[in-house]
Figure 1 (cartoon, helix red, strand yellow):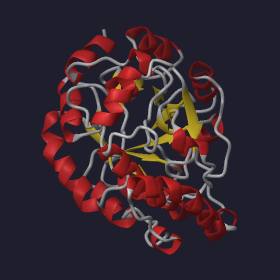
Figure 2 (cartoon, one colour):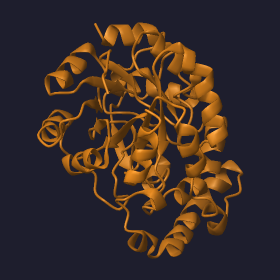
Figure 3 (cartoon, one colour):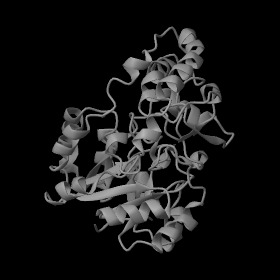
Figure 4 (cartoon, one colour):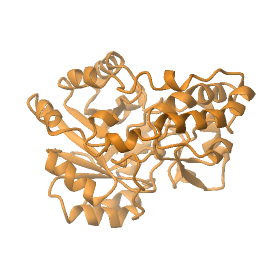
Length: 340
C-alpha cells in the first residue's frame, strides 16, 4: 500500500463520514473513507458507488466478535444477559425523560453480525478496506487479496500491530489514546493502551515492516509533520473534519464542539459497549458492560431522541483530545492546510 498524500480521512461511523466528505477529501488527492459500521451491506455498497469516481476512497468495516480472532467467545459471553439487564435498568430514567421505549435485552441481542458476510462479499469490489474492532481470520485477508483489495487494520498497541501484519495486513492505522470516537482495541474486554501517539508509533515501527497511518489528536500541519517524523506514511484526521461543511455531524454535535471550551474529553463504554472518547455528559456517569453491539442497541433510542431534542446530556459527542482546534470551512481547504 502506497500513500500518495500525507492525509487520510478517518472513518467516522454514525454520520460524520458522509459521502460528501469522502468526495471532498478524495478530490484533493488524499484518501477519503466511508464508515461501514452499523449500516447494511446494500447501503455501504451504494455509498461506495456514489463516491468511487471522486478519487481514492476506502471503506471501513467493524469486525463482529464472532469473526474477531482476539475474542475469547466463552469469556465474552459470561454473564452477558445479566449485565445487559442491569444496564437497561440504569437507562430507564434517560428513556423516560426523552419519552422513548427501550428494546428488551433479547431484542438488543437479536442481530450481532452487522451484516458481516454480506459486507465481505461486497468488499471484493472495493480497492481499499480497513477493519476496526478486531482482527478477522486469515481467510478474510486471502479472499480480499485475491481481488487485489488493499487491506488495513486499526491497531492500538504493538502486539496488535504485529498480529495484524502476521495475518496479512497491507497497512495499519495506529490509533493513539488521543483519538475521538471508538478505540479499536482488539480484545473488547481489554484495557486500552495508554502510550501517547508518538511513542506508540515508535513501538509499532520496531515490530512491523508494512506502512502505517497515525491517528489520534492530529489537528495541525505541525501534528502531521510530527507523526511522519515517527515513521507514519500518512496522518489520519477525524476530529479535525467534524466541523467541515461536508461532514455529516449532527447539529447538536457541532454546537457542543463549538461551545464546550473545557477541553475535557473522557473514555467511556456507555454509548456502545466499546471504549470511545467523547465530550463529558450525564449519560457517561453510567457504568456500561463491555458488551458490543447489544449496549449500542439499548442506547440507540436514547441517543437519537437526545439529538432530535438538542439534549447534550444523553447522546454521544465524540471528540478527540484536540477538539478545541477543530476548524469550520470546507474539507478541501482544511485538508490542503494540513498537508501544507
